[in-house]
Image 1: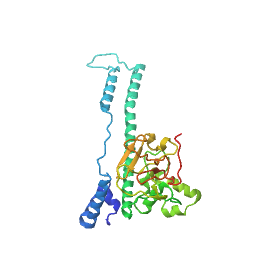
Image 2: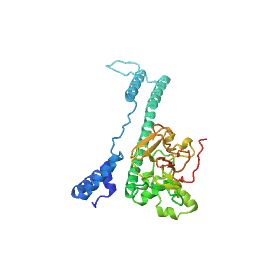
Image 3: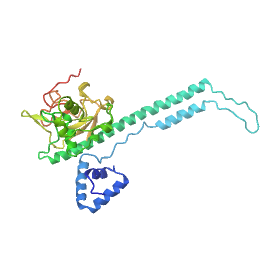
Length: 332
């Protein structure tokens, strides 16, 4: 194969390649000292943001299978079984299926369903949360790469005015620079009905050329299912957040919704939202506000949907949200 791309190296680290690809990349790394150096750098970045951390396993309720089997076995004993001929003796064969038999079997099916389907729903919900968290960790990794390329170590963020004055501009910036692809900005717990395969994050030049309704449509969709940090105001000027690897500073998360109390996200069936922090870890917040997270991730310290008031005031905006001027969202 040709020299492995960054995506191949990252996939090798995360165990996401096919067996054939894994062997090819491994062989190229052994032959190429430059790739070995690049692998060490990527491995350090991945470990810093927690991509190699052990995943949490979610088990079904204790004893679920045992209780279900015991219930079915007990119910089966209460059903009269037909008697046939044995050892040459004639006996009466009873072949009737009574109403009580039907009720018993129906009760067994209902009981099994009441145990199985809630467990299945819970497992699917946890799977969606885990996949969403993986997407956010990848986005965080690429935002870290972007900040490493900037002299001031700033993260991508919106401008104060113009076509790029919307929180979702983070996605086009990363895509234009080849640090991300459109599919990274989807959450499986999103309530939106759409064709994911045809979704495309616009490039910056496409966004700069758009006007009127076309521009509004691009700004509303470009961030996908996530919200992004809108920076802060310093001396009347909008500034982008800079990387200090803070553990309580929010960079991205499930997109906030202006139609819900406290702008809680519509993702994950209103059960909570995933939030990506600057040090790379992702946390699922079931309620807002929540301790020990002192900073409201969806409003600045004066309660407005706008850029933060200082470098430690983090605010996530939905794709189309502008950092200025401010707007107040009522909880009513």
